[in-house]
Image (cartoon, rainbow, N blue to C red):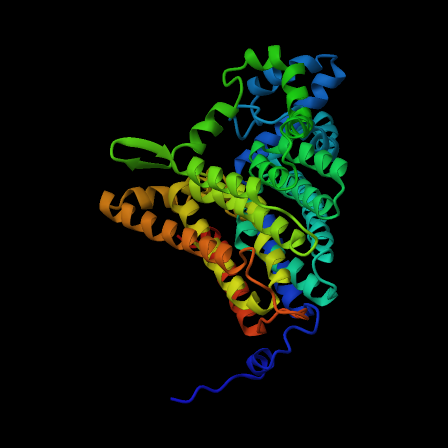
Length: 475
């Protein structure tokens, strides 16, 4: 059977690669996908975070700032959504969110209507995450600028990052704030690549105060460049300084809240995945991460391998976390930039890396849909935005977690094993393909990807992204 290559495939097979920047059709299609998600999805966790940011203004104006955590955990989201809950983040995280949502605070005081009852107010809150999203795209550009001189390849890396299912799920379907963490982490990585140690510590201090799992990137990078114990301790304290400062200032306030410090739940999730070794249970995460740290300790950097080992180590750190621990669907936003960045380092492997990233993103999304289906269902998400307003906020549609639970235990185990296997295999394949010592071909610049593959990836990610919305509208 004779296989006929398309014109695009011929260009790739002849070694030309992507010579033009992303065109209007690709950018427009991805932009439309993002807009549809922005106006239709809003997980209630974001509503809770917005309410906490508004409570920060109340505490500030009343002179009760040191009781912020007690005040915030006692107040519900609003009249239509009486849910209240924990206040998990450091105080610094709520400050930029409060600044962005100041118009909502003023509007509530003027009208007496709580923000979750207004589609416009919720959309404004959703748009607040677009600022760090745009900044993170710029940060990907800055990182790739240090790896590759070709501006077209860097633009495609930014496009692949923006269209990643790992990002679309966490930021556009669920709307959580992990995008702040991703931006600060990327800026810290850029500072590391430029050997700017102080900026590296400052950016990671900001990233760690957003979410503690930034340590899975920070610690390997620290061991990669620093072998002196006292200096490592000094830099570790510097990176933890903002988070520790918040916890010290609000320690008494936090201890009077029902949940106290949310890190306890995070630690439980870290060690849930275990391996049974003849009756001895061992954390899968500990095995993976300790192996990486040992490798970093004994690895020497030089000018020739510095950028490659740096990016690979950062990706490996988060790979240990997402493979070895139990994670929430929206956390993968911080994982999404790495494979597009690695494509710039390995342009001849860009096509296989793109498909591996697509497979990992799809498997992770479906796992989230099965295990955390309530986060995509009407009551906790879709009824609050445009689709819900058009349906009189009707609680209809299928909760995917209920559908999943209706299956037999054996069926659920098989599905989880399949999805987990696909995700782990895809991540492992990327680690192997891009491993240090796997020499890059000299003179490579253009990403060797055909536009047909790019279009198929966008179509697949769009289908997955719209699935909960279509079920809500049609079932």
